[in-house]
Image 1 (cartoon, rainbow, N blue to C red):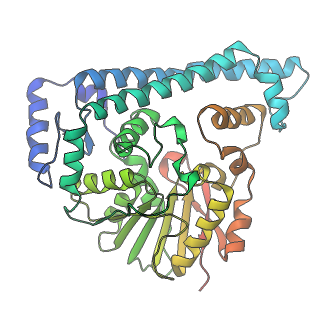
Image 2 (cartoon, rainbow, N blue to C red):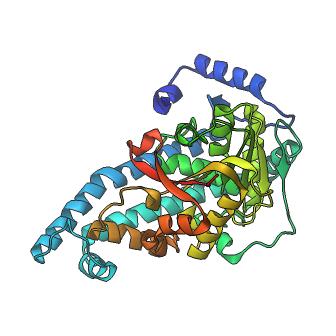
Length: 392
């Protein structure tokens, strides 16, 4: 799906901006909706120009860190390995990669720049929404019982310790801050460098979800749905289907429901564990999960795969889009090992290293799935992902 050039749009005339604002006011789906600066398509703009310009700067800085600075660090890593008489294209152990690379100032500064920019980005959005807490808490409360779609919150449920981790260094993680959904939405727009402001990545995931061979799609589930972008994409692809998104983060599903209500998309959201969804056996035709498995323990991952098998009907299909679900796995070079290590050490992805080593096709088969493959979403460049098929 084509994306909008945000910088060009934000540079449009004041008159054009007033057209966006007035049209989006008419678009609001529930009383109490707050849109201080309107929407551009599906994207609700940040509430102040100062915050928006600050996040534009942080996104531009992230782009530099991920491109020019990353290439310089990669070149330096190749030089270091060649100087040590090693082939930088070959697989090495984690210990060897760390011992060789961690003392280099170029490599360490690129890593440090990535992490500090990430931390500053979270601080910007958290500070703003907390400074206007009454306004935005009232907005969510106004949306809680709005439609289309439903919202289920379970304030008394047990929150497993591993789900409360501050993944990506997001303050409070997905469960511990009432504005986790707000921070996640704007933070991931920064992370994807403005490429997903119209939910195009998630829509492409929904478009790539494999359909059962009989073509019947009455119910879909997105596990670990975060703010509901993939779930909404599934509903838009299958308008007659009943679509659910579940996530342990109450603030995440609350924000997801509010956003779906605003966009008029009929999706049901529930605060539930992906490994214990509470749905009946053989209930769904399609189950999806996007970048969920590297954020859970291996034990949690195995339980989620088993749960996906339980709730799928015979012939149903399960698509998990994540790095270790690629059919063709990358060679674990020194550069790969280094990224895995610093992601674990400094980006609070504390289960990334075991996830990167785990045999997920074996776990699929152990859960009862037949394992196939399917083309991934458009943004993945045509790579294929493993797919679970529940036997008939």
